[in-house]
Amino acid sequence: MSHNSDLRDRHIVAIPRGLASAFPVYAQRAENSEIWDIDGNRYIDFAGGIAVLNTGHRHPKVMAAVRDQLDHFTHTAFQILPYEPYVALCERLNGLAPFSAPAKSVLFSTGAEAVENAIKIARASTGRPGVIAFSGGFHGRTTLTMALTGKVAPYKVKFGVAPPAIYHVPFPAPSHGVSVADTLRALDTLFRADIAPTDVAAIIIEPVQGEGGFLPAPTELLQALRQTCDTHGIVLIADEVQTGFARTGKMFGIEHSGVEPDLLTVAKSLAGGFPLSGVIGRADIMDAAEPGGLGGTYAGSPMACAAALAVLDVIGEEGLPSRADALGATIRGALEELALRNDGVPISAIRGPGAMIAFDIVTDSGEPDAATTKRVIQTALADGLVLLSCGIYSNTIRILCPLTISDALLEEGLAKLGRALVATH
Image (cartoon, rainbow, N blue to C red):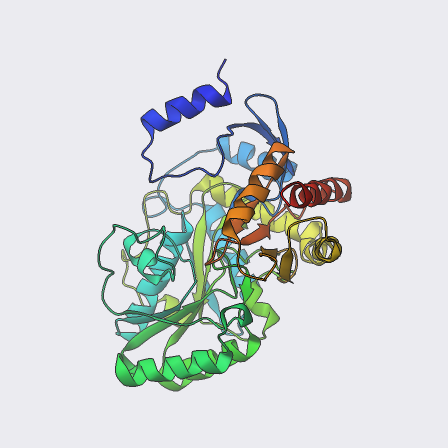
């Protein structure tokens, strides 16, 4: 029988170091908000597979839908022989799209694929090459999405020069000393110095930056971007890969602003752990690509589509947007109490909508403290709690527990977090 130590040795020999794992802990089974490793240790999951498990590990309705599809067929390639689950899911997504125009959807496998294809669609629709993204943003690890990502280490190190016509402007955040006015001035400067707005196909933004530190995009900024896009015929893309499907208290994070994007990219919690992503967009823009220009061998897998249809049912039946708000209130309250204590490491800047909550670990003088953040996460793991860090200074801890977590497990997990903050002090 394998153990964590054995698998770690095998891992080092078999897998390149470029694929880094946060912990030398190998999962064996999981249920809802709990994971057990191969050595039998139990963990409360505050990572959710990086926001993939809004409906929890192995939700019974999702598993039943996948088993039913498994009994019918597992693959045909939608471009060869299409199938109803793909069509039905796109109909559901079109009905959820947060814009008033008629919508169409297309499915893929990963978030990066969704982003790449959103850019392709925007370029096909406008006939332009340029794309504008934001510092601190994360959009994937492929060559194009790596270029869109606004963080060098570790995502761009050693991978060469980015593709042309990709530009970045600062993302507004008080902790970075950047205001909305600063961002809009930088955008105006970009238009005057580097690329004319008439050469820009798309502006892409996360309604809440994920890897960048759980930083919400101010409504004022989103409104200004919408106006800029309308003025210059630019496609506005909301990257909802991490913010989508009830995590923020709305089905999509952009809905908090009231701003209508032209395209949305979705993935992660769409299919409850099965690989599935998509682009939802205004029908007139989505139809710009020629037949055969979109697709992929495994894109829109029937197994994943069946899972996603069940996920959407669960979100509605269990009221997960409201549950996200309730969880977020509990998490915020616990963190605010921890911030007032003087026996733990200092924490600050508790933030995020719904149950997409984060906070920063800082020194006594208020500076980002990446080293202590890492120790807190390791201490929590030893006590049976899985946490993730993020942020451009690597000092942000993000909480992404399943929205189906019980109140008892949430309280237990928050107690473990508190103990880790004290033990690391």
